[in-house]
Amino acid sequence: MDDHRISVETRYVDILLTNGNQVSGDMFLQLHGTKSYEPQRIEELLNGENEFIPVRHGDRVFLLNIRHIVSLTCDADSELTDLQRLGEQYSVSVETVNGQLDDLQVFVNLPSGKQRIKDFLNQRKTFLLFIKDNKGIYLQRDMIVRVSD
Image (cartoon, rainbow, N blue to C red; front, side, top):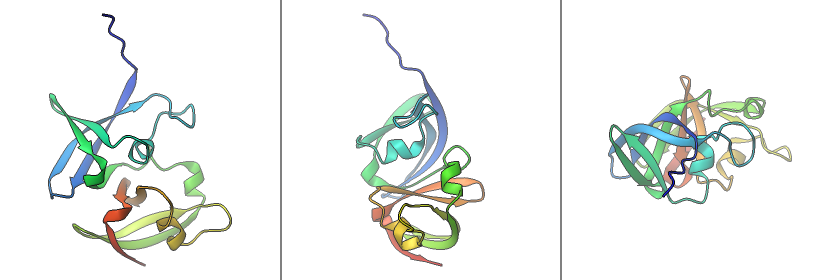
């Protein structure tokens, strides 16, 4: 049997699960995203159709159920697009089911003049991107309890 492998790159992430456990390791991303010729972004995996995503930790690969991911932290530069940076920038605090996150930045650049934090939070995405100290923090929308400015 031929060994067919798809070329991928890896990106280091820290993940907080609903049970309080943390998983750190490498996510596998395709060299081309589904919507562009640029490398796939973590957002595409988190908001895609797959319910389980692989994360390599040492010699082991874990398949994580995205419904049980509260947050995923990664390098912001690889996730924040130029288009997003053009949006309105807000500083917010977010309370999740696992605790409080303060001084997060949000870039809101949505069509039809929807530039409010409320519009950002009401997007039909499972995970939303927040920024803190050059880190991208994807929060699962269903795990967000409260947002304040």
